[in-house]
Image (cartoon, rainbow, N blue to C red; front, side, top):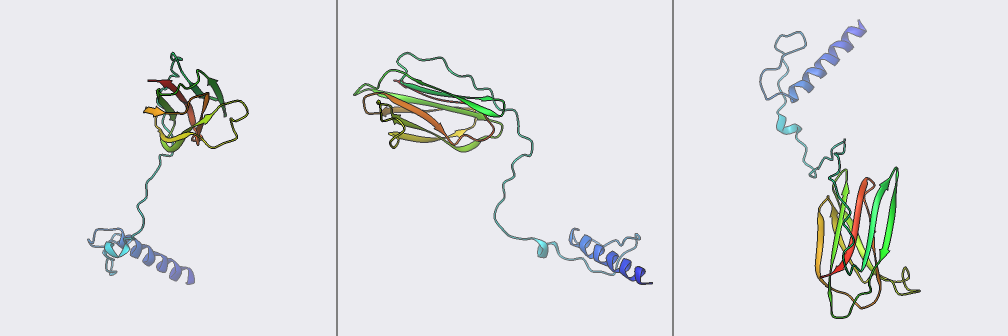
Length: 181
């Protein structure tokens, strides 16, 4: 007897919950007949809150990104490639910066999920200085498979090095290079 009352209460509760999911038409009970329970207006069940953006569960194949050939007069370059579960960094120095000349920086990154927040930084690479000071220049760029350029960049003369920072965990390929305009 007790089991029947509990079962009936569960059925009534299920009917009320289903009523909240309907568009206001007649509520059909579990036996197929019309129920005496009035439908709950759906507006009362709508919650307000922050906008939510969903990220796909399965990442897509990253867009192809070829590492460019070394350019004449190139000042500095860093290349990042995926090597299994880790990343390999290749850093190259080039020609020192020349006073009065402007330079371009090309930065690109590809990952399974495009992201923002990746950046590069240019550092003074004079002997005994590299890694001991603040960057001379830095810029954020999206890791979206596109090449992003900064043009007409005036930098102080001398050797420099470039570094890429905040790569997404699923980054496949990235590079940053500086060359004269």
